[in-house]
Length: 182
Image 1 (cartoon, rainbow, N blue to C red):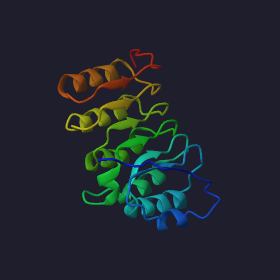
Image 2: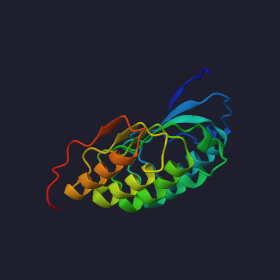
Image 3: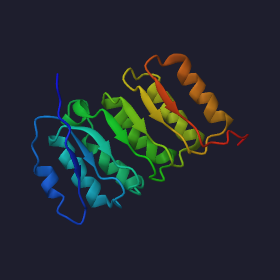
């Protein structure tokens, strides 16, 4: 089938309730990159995702913390519109740690993501292990961005485990790590 992608970029100083009121029948991209997200912003986005078919969610550089990540994933259940339509998730440059990724793992488990980018965060080896464990059972992710995440040899080992069992991953970005003994 054919799908339409409309890219929305807006400032959070505007009323976010407009997003929750959108009712589009075709998947669209929601781009809120480089806006400093507060808990209220993530709650509004989460509510909008419950009724709007977003295929691409770009939240690069939004400076989210654990509470914002937790609010954001509330809309991802097995039967929600959000879970049925999300294909690409960009969380580049949010200063996420492995603890923040615990919430993001719910999105991986309940969607058919094709692309996930968590580059330029602080997930380290523990966060890499969380992603690897989720992707061992994923048959949809073809593109994964992990570069610049303070990975060590242990993280590289986890990634090698993933590559030995995951048959769908086509593109993997892990540059920018020193792969030292840490």
